[in-house]
Length: 102
Ligand code: FES
Image 1 (cartoon, protein in one colour):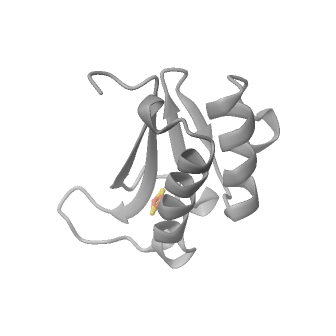
Image 2 (image 1 turned 135 degrees about the horizontal axis):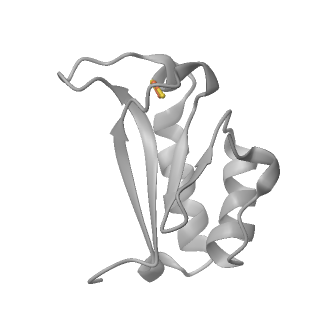
């Protein structure tokens, strides 16, 4: 993969100095990284997608957060069901899920 079609950044709660803020982490963000990876694999679109665990986006009260490029779509209040729908409609289908955007 030279350049993925979609780059999915999932908040892992760490601050710029490396300490963890905790908000998204406490809401099971690590599990959501795995959920994204599994749903992407299930749809056989792994070659189009890169999932990255990243630092705090600064909007912790709306967490867990994921941001997807190239569109720059920010999703909040994520859970397993929302991640599944985002993978189906956005990553596989090409249409962002408006109701989960923040
Ligand atoms: S900890 Fe996720 S946005 Fe701050």
